[in-house]
Image (cartoon, rainbow, N blue to C red; front, side):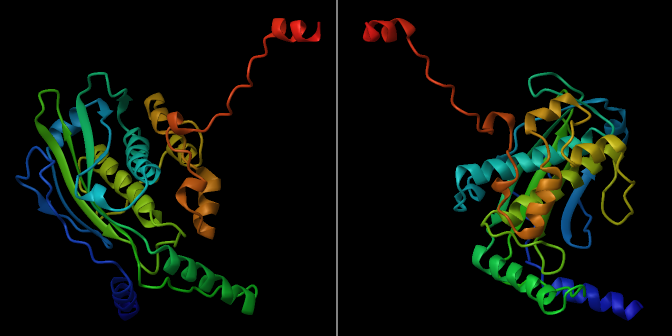
Length: 293
């Protein structure tokens, strides 16, 4: 069994996009950051445990791209969805313990994330992988045959984030980097597919860091609350402030990920980005009467 596990980890590492931890200068301090890697994630973290556990309220500032990360040829809509995926995932995770308030309100902690690196997905390779994964089910119906994703054109993401107290002093920080892999990353036929999925993974990890005041890596996470589970399935979030990031795509999003749809096919983003039908033009009844006469 030990050798099976070792071999599986080796295969996963071989089919994973390598991404290095970077420092963009967006954090107030890089002092006392210590390595805390997960199975697929590279990270450095620091947390003032007593101060973070004493905090009750929290606000989430807008997620941003560094100038270097913004040069990746994504559309404005794609960048907005990636940023919003981080903020939404953080908000849902942080709601497990904190009262989340609007960005304009004061709070015990203020959280901000900055995307410092992003590599696009090769949409063509992702499409080929998705087709290849369907073929075995046609050849051998009813027999589950896992097909690894092609280890080419995999996307990646790196993010810096911190939590500051009312005086602006850093109380927690994380540098996080992960690449998509051939075994656990579902290919989406879109250049932002991997970055979008990884954005949610980062938001969840950083949320756990603040909720527990401990690194989220190297331990078994507690099961989500009923409220968190409902929100992840597209229901109303526990904290009303999380509505600013829109509802999670829920079951529709899971199906879309499964069949390889682009993120913007199932995720509406923030409420401000939702498409509303244009109102019908008003008819001047007086003008109509005049024409009839």
